[in-house]
Image (cartoon, rainbow, N blue to C red; front, side, top):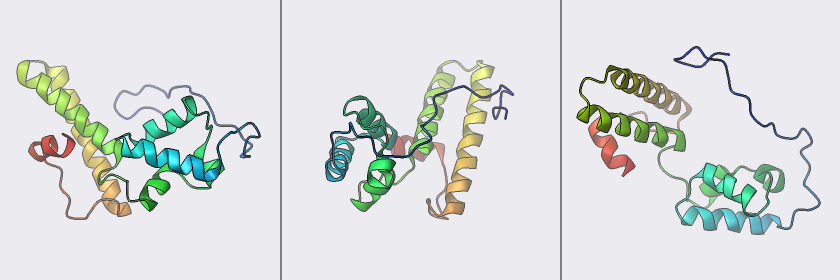
Length: 151
């Protein structure tokens, strides 16, 4: 399938193993992995960063195989989940960076187009999260308020 705005094809990447079995060489128990997730979340890391840190630093290949739940579910149980989803925050940060660049370089039309595309992605994602009940139905995206939300 093609990319959203550029008509380019998808990227290749690594695939997860087909067998979903707990590895014998794994050092950490279920409770230890859960405590690691809580510790990393309290340090201010996002869900994806927690997963990467667990994989690279602690040698935990897949949290779902060990705990039978995702990192986000563990954070939700311990009330550490952020109010806004991680991908929405990343898009808002991207739009703020492009906006800052566009204020300095008024005639940069590719930046203007990038701003429009990013805002449309944000609106599409907000619509999805409202439909799924993750965001409140009355939540509205505003560029001025976005600076306060992200910072």
